[in-house]
Amino acid sequence: MPSVFARAMSPAEVRFAVRLTPRGGADRIEGVVDGVLRAVVSAPAIEGAANQALLRLLAAELGVSRSSVRLVAGAAGRQKLVVVDGMERDEVLARWPELAV
Image (cartoon, rainbow, N blue to C red):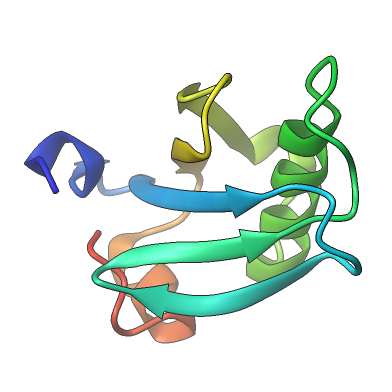
């Protein structure tokens, strides 16, 4: 995976890659595979519904507001690049230690 998908931007902003599966039943995090977070959402990949569900799921899992989580790449594909504002790298790694951050 290119380093752009796994680097911290600043002490209070963290980027990481997510592989999203839409229409997968209940919204959930399946874990980390090869440094990439795997997520499943029930929403379809229509008009950004799955992306919005992913951002809400990540915000809930990390305990931050929905506005703190942004999709910066991959809006039309399964591989996404997400930025979380207001969190440090170590805080995200405490949740998912195998994640490439």
